Length: 399
Image 1 (cartoon, helix red, strand yellow):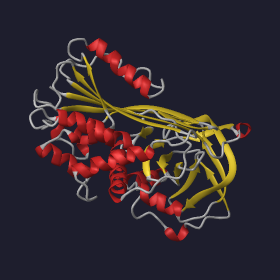
Image 2: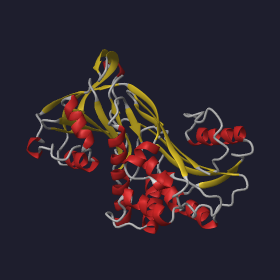
Image 3: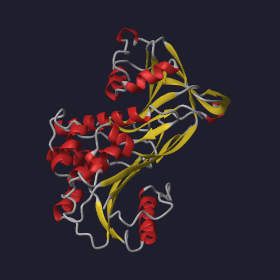
């Protein structure tokens, strides 16, 4: 039998909160691990043309929930891919760090809405190990639900879609269009809902129709415009600008390569921390900022990308060891399905789920007034500032 793992992302980027307690060492290391794993998956996705939008936190959380039930070689394989030893984390310390991270990311004021939800659905009659059930609740605040995946798959799909609809505030009313194969006894779900407004909204009367020069086509799009003071860096390969949401606890960083070749080079060596360090090293300056209004809705079967980064045995019924979830029947992971939506406009962002050797630190001093015109392919990421957790990352290549 197989596990069908579904990661759903639905969010609205941001507006954030009051001052938060500093994170402990293990939680900081867990954030770095999540960001690093997200970079790996993004690099694989970026090898294909087209737009990209995904959530490193969302995908990592689902892998983490599977890891809780992995044993033997399967557990070691997950630990190697996540590079847990590099960050000094064990299964227990990583799980505890994730628990603290989820608490840290939970809003404490009404300025913004950030909601994480994890759920595991098992077919009726499947005996899930109590330790796994308890660990899901303890570390991931994940509910365990029974649904007739085998006996009444149509009813089960309704249950799953209703859960997704509730957790994404109705933004994803239908995830699964048809019943899952009755041989799948477990479905693992993750949803992220995130909503907020820009600290500095784009004036609607400044939005104009103009050309976006995409990879494959040139289209007329709505280009938003404003002048303001932002953290901004520029070198011979790219520009980057940081756009804060309401309380500045969450920011969007837009990275604009100078050429298509620079975009590819940047993506294959993408380092969130490097971009963050560069933006943190400069004071705000005046920027003439042009950014397209855009919406993306993307879905991924992540089995291939996960195998590309080294997760293999977990997908094999002959080699997977997920006996920490259930001793019987034999379980293997079928896939991780990730759906992500984002909408960027004058008011804010609604999101529903760099390169080593190219940084020129000597050129981080930008002119007094910077021109930042994103009318060609760019990368963007949405980050929680206190933890440095990258919640979402994407590429806009065509509009």
